[in-house]
Length: 211
Image 1: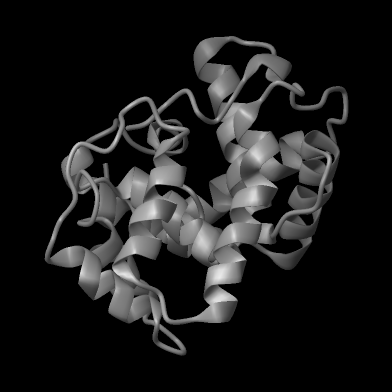
Image 2 (image 1 turned 180 degrees about the horizontal axis):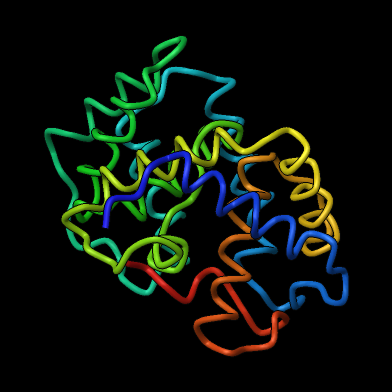
């Protein structure tokens, strides 16, 4: 089945229209991912403000990202990671190059890469995993990069009005403000996770799935 970025945008806007007004619950206080999200944003922001990313910086940030994922770091790409460092140190790094390079750095995982890139630039890159992907596809790690790029384009295309509704939902659900990109992705994740697992929203965490 061929999915377009426009179809992804439409389905995301439909999800937002259906769920953003629901304010009956909040994420559980024990949700480690939700509690540490602002801390990750702050740490990445410090490094980005400082500039001069190093291989050690990137490895340690990937370690932090993988702290939420059931599958730990098994291997790192000695050639790709320095290439990512070079891109991160550019004034305006190319998004497509960041995606393709980051996906090769740790475990050849687009899931881990998407989290790293989101914390690097939360206004640009959404998080991606098997739960979000299941809105449109059956999970296939070999197609994760191309599908992430489609998903990324679809998220960016979401209307300003729908993005505003998603941010308002996220502020209630999470207890703090997040970027439009994060709000859209989080609403998609949590609503889809509940639909797949049949869990009450307060028991859902974004750390349950890796790929």
